[in-house]
Amino acid sequence: MAYELGMDFPAVLKVAMGETKFFDALHDYYQTYYLKQATTQDFLNIIRKYDNSKKVNNVINKFIDPKYLSE
Image 1 (cartoon, helix red, strand yellow):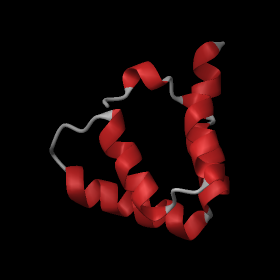
Image 2 (tube, helix red, strand yellow):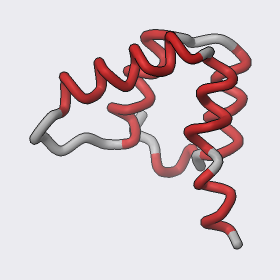
Image 3 (cartoon, one colour):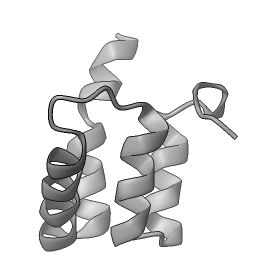
């Protein structure tokens, strides 16, 4: 049951950011980390580069436990 909620994260994030910023961020993430190991924090850094609004951060905080993020 808990995992099913996690499957919604990309869709909810896309709505919060808007399609253009969401797909631009994913493209940047792919270009930056292709064939490299990335962390959750690396992903969020790219997302926040494109949209660091309260709405997006609320989505992130809903789905990602802060204990899994680096300081």
